[in-house]
Figure 1: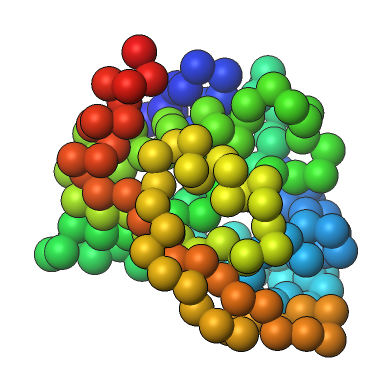
Figure 2: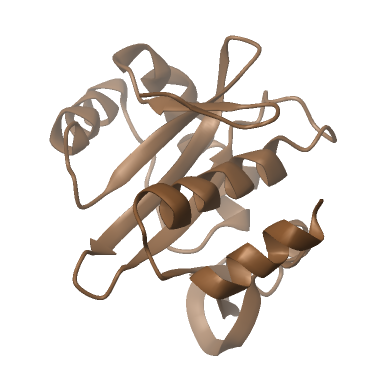
Length: 180
């Protein structure tokens, strides 16, 4: 089942998406904007990762499609079905069109699916304190900063703080009403 937003379609990842996703992971600017770490990823490693995650019901990864082209990935991972929560992340590939609201539509469409279809109660994520575009995106989507994780990510020879952010089911429905 594809999930339609206003601009994007969230669909299953396909093997043909892996090259653009690999380029995104290997892109230095993208790497500096996200938490965690990565090493250069080979085509073979990317293929093996795809084979490992395909069909995983505890970690759902959607391809973001715009005008028939793969533009990024939106995720619901570490899904806790008992406590009804999941970690959410979004990443656009460097070649995705800029300034037209693709990330906003991808996040809001993922929230709709998580809260209205999966009946989750809480989505959470982390954002580097240096990543102002992501902070503005999640604030626009109704997310709340719950706290700061100090010096949790090491990038560019320095430790960087992350914000812990989340949105609850009730907050989502209030946000959705305010967007009309």
